[in-house]
Length: 293
Ligand code: SF4
Image 1 (cartoon, helix red, strand yellow):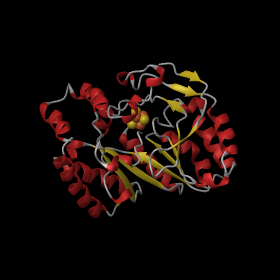
Image 2: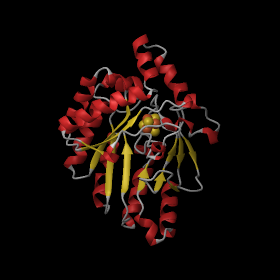
Image 3: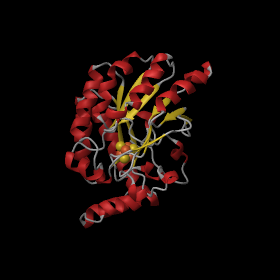
Image 4: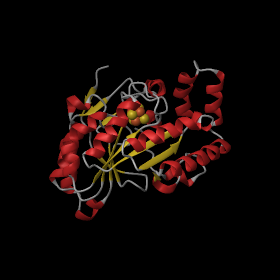
């Protein structure tokens, strides 16, 4: 798959979520192609369907210049805002090694000593390439998405993402480098409700990697996401399909919440926002951060 290079008109966008003020997406699309990705709508303006998610990438080749110009115009009081890299793409997917857009943007933030929090969210060990910039910024943190400790499950759902075991090692490397890092356990996989020992194992590994705080989110199974999930689930046994069907119910979420609460206490882990975020059309929680990566 050849990426398509484009000229973007703007880069730093206001965030619709309360915990981030701005979002930066250097790419449209994400070749990691996770089955559960909520961002699979993002290619619509290029005429890309949800089912094509993971098979295309648009590269905003002028992203670094835009970051420089937009930061220069940003008034001082707005520079206090938290910037998330990224909300609908992974800023460190493999093509970043060639294009270096995320690095270029961090470099621009570092050049103006951006005083607000720069929050990076990724599944990729490529983030360690930029430890020099992340440690030079006044305030930076990295979230690493880890949904399972089982590489087979990771390969099944997070089709081309770095394996879970590699991400755990990356978290340890970030911690060693002194960068504040947390784990994003999202989506919280439905089978943990019947196999809590697997979540127990995951939490144990996160603690071993030096993590002290997790951000957790229940699986989002809105119809457009199910369109892709159903393709993956079609080949799975009945009990797996059933677990994902049950995941839409309040009872399921409450059962998982209770398991999570016990295991957080057992492992001494903190929970960001003090709750497992979930997506329900009638629920204000959907206004919480909805990172995709
Ligand atoms: S969940 Fe993140 S890493 Fe996975 S496809 Fe979506 S944006 Fe990419």
